[in-house]
Amino acid sequence: MNPYTEFENFHNQIVVPAFAPGTYKGSVNVTPESIDRAGFAAVMLVLGAGAITDGQTLTLQASNDDGSTDPYADVPAADVLGDLTAFKAVIAGEANKCVAIGYVGLKRYLQIGCTGNGGTGAVLSAFAVLGFPRNAPAQS
Image (cartoon, rainbow, N blue to C red; front, top):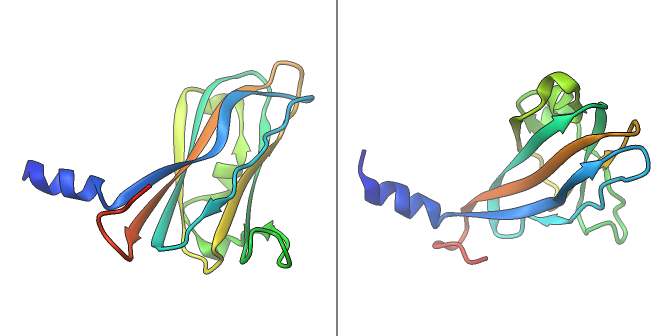
């Protein structure tokens, strides 16, 4: 493997937060960040789960204009590479794992939300990896 190829690939991707790492539970829900795909042809969404005592329910939504006139709506399974159902259902058996899916839909903005459940909750974080920039190297 050519080490320079890996280095060049790194400059063709940007990692942005989808929501802040934290413990989410019945009284603490995620405040999602808007993920702007402008200038990028691909996006991979990654969920990192730590300790989970109560299952959580994630949402994946998309909009053309960050919700101004096109409200955020659930992303259909046809616009996802990978198992959307498994990504959205955070359960105790998935503790200490990362799960990733790709988004191939046409909407510009994405959000990952989480509705907390239970009294103890789950330690979660999520981010997006934007790839295939129109202009490389990618600038954050």
